[in-house]
Image (tube, rainbow, N blue to C red; front, side):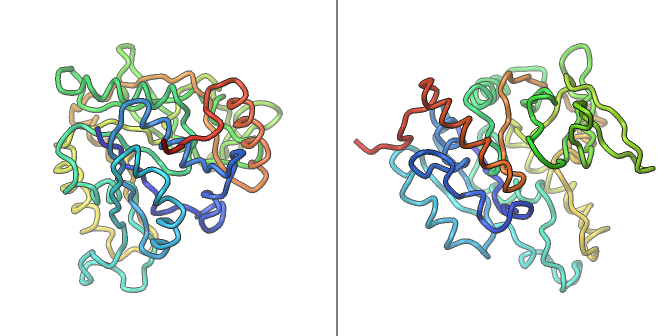
Length: 299
């Protein structure tokens, strides 16, 4: 089973490829833990979607670590391969996660998973993703979204964007709504509304952290949707097309997305202040035996 790892926009918030700096006792990165968890859950191929601008640096940090335990492929997300007559020639910003997933289309013909490179999803989440992807061939749903409780995905410092999920009584996704600037205010999760006033969020609501399972026929749907988006917004300097926006439209058209709740706690490097907390939690998990002291030892 293949896992697509979206890594082309790494560093936008934290700075460069600092998200690949060591946080474990042997210099392990968040991405190392994700690959380790994915492999032990049953994924046997990783497709990294990266940016050509940090191609050499990324491969230097990643190549050699994983090849003995999992197949690795690299594909590139850029703007240069899009029709020049339909895009702004000054634009360098990428066009979003839907196009990132499409970059892996030629390498995949079976149900597959998608994650962001910068999130520490943890073991339980990868196992749930893998196991539910296996059910896609013979199930009433076409896609899977592994979701977290909001209380479990807020960083120690700073504000974040979170995809707040509405779920029906049968456990299917109704919509994902991005809320910007989510943080704890007076101990409660809040976000600023369009009038710049604080609105509260239920800390037990489910949140999408971009951990999806799809059938391969999703590529054709994504391509059609992205082409329509690009025809309208190609000349824009900032417009992008995200997986949640695409999936909301799919749901409106009758597609069923199974929501799977994970008990895991998310970790990520949103800002430099997060690193100390992440290091402490990883060291504690290693002491408990959740992770070995060396992730990818060669025999």
